[in-house]
Length: 355
Ligand code: NCD
Ligand code: ZN
Image 1 (tube, rainbow, N blue to C red):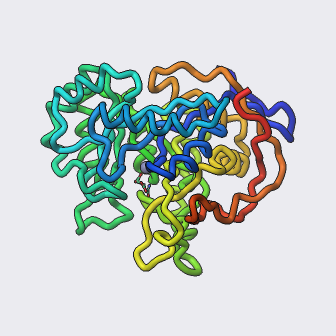
Image 2: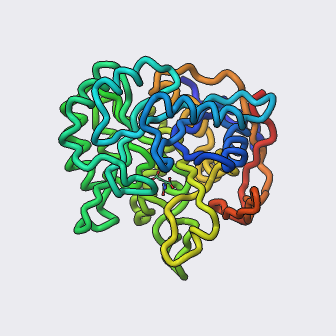
């Protein structure tokens, strides 16, 4: 596959991208979150960590309809639903999920790892029959890869999860598609690179653009707080190299995760960066900083579709080099959100989407 070079130094045309990991939330918020993503992306994998979580095909179908009701007129957007894996998910549940083309896979949250994960898996080792069935029926496993044991340092939780759980799972189930979501460490890059060909990873804009200094130097920067937490610069650099490597195992997943301003700017702020309003532009920013804009299309628009066995999009989007600012705040129904990168300059702007 030939890399697409920028048409000129001031415009960049790429195949319409997909977002392989995000959070839309539910209810009134869909009127804000769905158009923000459908603005640019053709498809998105919608995470199931609602309260209560989306555990059944029927719940996912109903949620999907609520999402579709908020796709603006004339926009062509396809939500792909992830089901929430619990300790009680049965082999029969997996068989049912496998029959439904709108279900993309199961999401494994270790219980307590992140927002709305209390119903998650408490004993990964006991999930054998379910994983076996997922492998047999070709249902991918999407993983929040962090252990939750209190004695494990938060900066080590991804690596320990890989060593303790993910390495054994990928060895035992060599035909199971596994996606390690929002990776944050050099260890994860190396693990995914060396694992069998059905193991892949998503990368967020914040983990490409920032490291833990951006969270903690000069004060606590709550809007840069997400899970897995930002790591040290050497890890950021490994993620950047993976993103621009052209290795098809690494692709776009924003993990856009809105929490209202009052729940971020408080003594115990929620984890999640709300990046949907500037998502592809943030990736363009990261790739431009690395002088690798020619690698953006594969990462954003080809590799995820190829991995999930879905057709590549046929429409194009065009970005233009033009300094602009991410919104400082977004208001909807009387509530306020502070998006990720709020008020900061971006070098690239979408000027044409989905044509
Ligand atoms: C996500 C959320 O808010 O739902 N938060 C986050 O920090 N990434 C959950 C998740 O993906 O871990
Ligand atoms: Zn997420």
